[in-house]
Image 1 (spheres, rainbow, N blue to C red):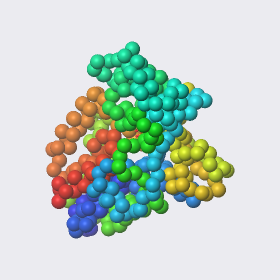
Image 2: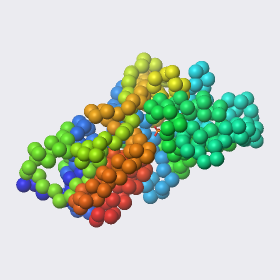
Image 3: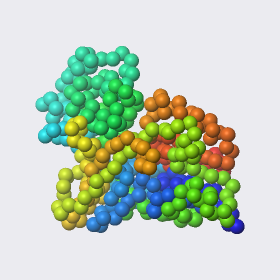
Image 4: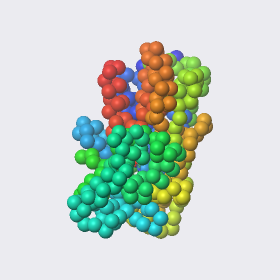
Length: 367
Ligand code: UDP
């Protein structure tokens, strides 16, 4: 019989931070994952000497100094600043919505001119209490930006009409009247030099890790392993065998290609904001690390509706799913030896810094 204090289900960022913190305090952890690698969705594949963000672009950004110092223990970060471009038909714009975008859209030069145009557009389309993403977006940036840069992209990304989406999704994006193309408002930002795998490997270095094993299979097969508590970072509805029904997700699939050129699109992320192009963005991975390799690797990102068997990516935090989530959370409260965490365990659209914050909160609470 091998005895552990914790079984951690999922070797992604949340699980790995828990494993590290608990091991530091002398707890014995076993970490399992159904994939054949650690790191969850921040895992990088090495192709042509380039770190390829296999499950989509991950750019670390935070305003929490403690979290920034925390990740910097495990890797040095470069000075990458996310400045994606948007392509709409044959026009190209800077993101997020800032003076470069407005100047290209309307041929204007000053913040006063931009504010005046947005103000006029707001007046004709203003909603007193924005109830959905469309109303919120138009209130914020006016109809031109909404139609060219938000509507098509968002409807592809979420597979729903902007009128049926919650407004908080769009609040993630900054709106500025300065010539500043930094996609994030956070104080700290960068990509770990050498890739994310290096961080996860260190976080898991004191734990036993078993890959390619699913939780249910593990509990059946490994009778000789005992553990006192479980930290579960898989989908909460799956844990309860979907007994109240499925929570909904959006999923994304990637079409990755190696190209025989050293620079395909000139930046890491280009969003394709028109509805007619089926993918939402193209990632050119080498630019995250200012790579000078002779070839390049690009990934086209196609969003689709999730169905059982596919990887769940983005929780859909609308009313219907929130009601269902509450039912599962009430079940979870009845279990005193299982903690649910991470994007799937909490069914929450977490950035990486919030994932770490939340893992640290959990380990502090349970220690
Ligand atoms: N969004 C948009 N146009 C863009 C980029 C983003 O309308 O060019 C909207 C879209 O609704 C998206 C949301 O802003 O779901 C949040 O975008 P973000 O880039 O933060 O999404 P993530 O990188 O997490 O997929």
